[in-house]
Image 1 (cartoon, rainbow, N blue to C red):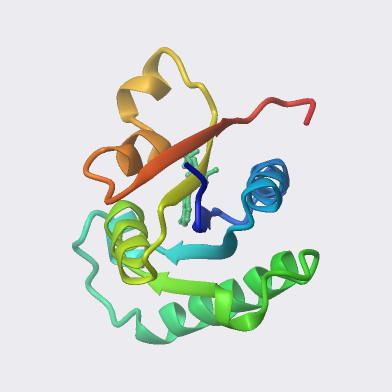
Image 2: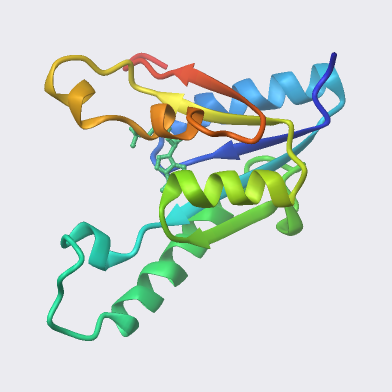
Amino acid sequence: MTYQHILVAIDLADECHPVMRRAQALAASSGAQLSLVHIVEPMAMAFGGDVPMDLSMLQQQQFDQARERLDGFASRYPELTPEHRHLAYGQPRQEIHRLAAEQKCDLIVVGSHGRHGLALLLGSTANDVLHGAPCDVLAVRLTKDQ
Ligand code: AMP
């Protein structure tokens, strides 16, 4: 069985390039289409949901900056044409699942830090994405020397 459409979820950190390269190699060997997604998390979520001011302008700036960074990242990969770059707003797990289903992706690729101790208790996006995913999920192990 080969994959047809691979969705790569990135948090826009430099360490996402090894994740992208792994997805690229998989796509090349299976002839799959590649798509990229970044989720902008609502500021109110970071502040615990109770913010006594209007964040709409800041959120628009946050979204515009994320678009620039996403395009900068994607420009290194010629197959990621603009229609295959997605920016969504919300909770990463929910939005990644929604987009994967909408775009009929059969594999989601994320990075994994292999956390332990307290960080493990706090959970990871990779772990979160795995639960209830509408398709296969590949967690690419991220190490410092990649
Ligand atoms: P984390 O658990 O936050 O260290 O993230 C692990 C992986 O989840 C990252 O390498 C990305 O593949 C994915 N990820 C985390 N945050 C986001 C985000 N905001 N948008 C898309 N993917 C994300």
